[in-house]
Length: 287
Ligand code: SF4
Image (cartoon, rainbow, N blue to C red; front, side):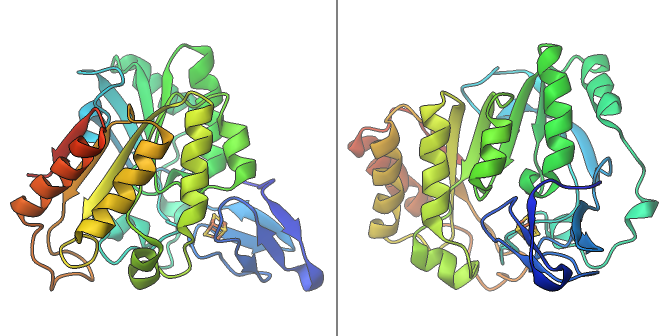
């Protein structure tokens, strides 16, 4: 599908404006997320109508604990991601190698809406990988869902551009943003990412009254020092003490097989720091 999220550059190169990675893509090449291609000097989404995973989940699995509690949510995601985290839980679909997308079964936006309605799901979640990279597909479904009274939920790393955020804001009802750590943490494990953009987006989402919850995955020896946890807590508190904050336990996985599972005492410490600061709803996950 043709994308509107690009700027033309010299020699048929394009600048993708969908997320803050801001890839400059040469003709016939793909962006960092591997699902957006420059064809003859224009940008195309390779995963439009091509979900790699569709499931019905409990909304608490997202995790969202304060939005439509105890309901089911139709969840979908495509291949591709703009982060390539060393600890990704879904790396087999997010870090896709070169895939022949023509072999993936098509689900149009109407098909997705019908699946949600048939299965009595009051919401649709754009999740599993980063929804921004299938932004056009997600937005088309969101517009139709909104008209029918279905709620739209993003589970996101928060790195979408201002342009894309402005487009989804009228249709987005709730979001869980994964705020992973300090700038040093991103530099170490997800080079090229500027945490300030994620923080700006979180503030903007809050300003527009989108239901917001934040997850922080604690990875032992990477972001588990008291000062790391305090940085997350202080930022969340500065936006609103009412934002639910989820600390999640990590396990050895993907390119971080050498780590130890997050210690329970670390999770308890994080919970205490957040509660002492005044965050009203603090949760521990994956324990
Ligand atoms: S959406 Fe993909 S191609 Fe576009 S800037 Fe982000 S990583 Fe690059």
